[in-house]
Amino acid sequence: MRRLLGYSLVQAAIPTTNLFLKNVGEPFDLRRAEYSLLVLVDANRDVGPKQLARALGVSMPYLTVTLDRLEARGLLGRSRSEVDRRSQHVRLTRKGADLVKRAEAVAMSMEKELLSHLTPGEGALLFELLQRVASQRRA
Image (cartoon, rainbow, N blue to C red; front, side, top):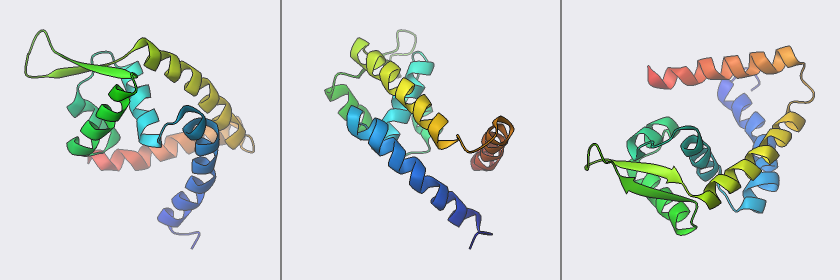
């Protein structure tokens, strides 16, 4: 089984998911996709829903429901583009930006703990290899 990439990825996801739920998900009341969405919006000013859906690999209906949920919590807002009224921009609210800042600090500490048994070189290699595998989704 260890030769199967899918099996190894699932096995690696178990401690990652458990740590996320314990440290970020439950304390900040965020699902993994919601956290990822907020971090993407924080890093990309005036990003559009289509760009977010593509970056997260989710459908537009799923993204819309997620945006609605986060907007209802006061974490982000959507506004029409001044340049092209047909498109929307998604932006964090002050409350959303504060939550992202606090959650990211916890997530960084959590990841440091998760990767503590790897050397810095092994950690860098892990990220590089995962990015190379993920790049196949664009092909």
